[in-house]
Length: 368
Image: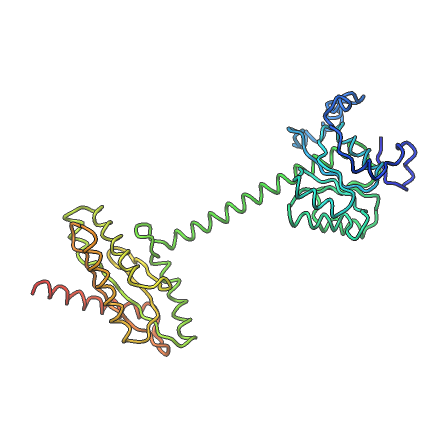
């Protein structure tokens, strides 16, 4: 039996029109014995109509798919609904206009929507489909009596999964639904794979910039940010300082207490350094016992304040934690004035040189 829109000249064998109340009445149970008693069993239709599709890899229905029907013509809608029941699908709603279609799509989340293009009111089926795709991304198959190019192009622009021109056969409807579901599942799987790859790429990129032991930035992460910050400081005319910090006595800690305790000392150092600088400052472990930091300062006079904060946090840490080693650090700094032409590498060399001067002072003080 073919299913035709009203006024298409194919209405001769259709039942009489339904009333508005009948169209809006609760849907019958399509899995009841009344449906099962139909002359053509769904299993027979599967065997006769879809051998070709199976040969191309399309799987038969594994579960009862839910379908939202959007059709304003009562006789056509009733015929399509009964056809869907015979084919083994479950109709979860029947909308008569675009607004109702959007509401039912959001409420019932069907596996697929059969959408008539020519709906009454301000919103036709194509416009309703566009809204549904934006909100719920459900597969849609258009039903229409229109064959003109403009209507077809408008429908294609919404990204439907299928397009059926009335009148159509049951086998054509079944084919359109099965192909649409298959394409939709493939698209969803592709989007999920792409999203997983994107997240993995972000994680890998993040890990490539982070020091695994201390969770601070590593050498690559520091230099990537430091070059940007130096350019920004010159454009905005403010001073920044590069700090080179060395964990004193790491070799002795490793030799005396083992490398696991040396790792703990590095984590302790990163904690103290993190408390010394602001969240907006850039802190990193270059490797071994070497740490660096980049902070905005008012000028050379800002460096002693940061050195004093480091000493204060070191004293507090030693008082609060019992360690078999004496946590201590040396620090050197190089201030980059806005007018300077020095690059990041040159400024770090200056800070490193200043750090070694501080380390020698520590060594002399301890010997004295």
